[in-house]
Image (cartoon, rainbow over all chains, first blue to last red; front, side):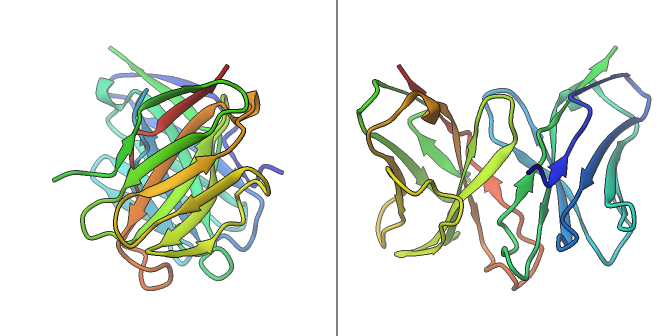
Length: 115
Length: 118
């Protein structure tokens, strides 16, 4: 039962354009969502998070949008840079039953930013 | 300014042998999590430990897997009598705040141990 889904295994974007990575979830108890970036042979690195009481959080070039009614979140990267090429994981947690750092991850989207 | 340190980076074991994976959390962090990533899948939670205590092991397979985080030394994930299906990347992560105390302490991950069972 995949509670966090990233339906696009890969995404290719030109440098300078916007990258939009999507994530859907099924567990209505999730109240905290995160995005991690992962390079090959390294561990995931935290990028940005959003609480369910918000619908948008911004940090520099990265913005996360949350649509609770649709159980959907997205990560926008603008402008995209070649160094952004990596696998992006969406993750979610439920602080009441699972604890804040017991994360459920999606399967990841490989982003490739081309020159 | 060491981050989460995991060793070994690569571990090859024959079926039936034991695998020991070590994790030293970031300095000052007393909460350790183990996650496993099977090929073509996302990371899956295994266990959450604090010093000398297992807090949540709901993601651990019922047999052959155990974890500890002693008062002194690194956290250890032990897999006994390994099988080919145990081949995966095992990631350790640490955090500063107790879950529920705040959401400003996301997990810091190590670079993982890649276990190959032949």
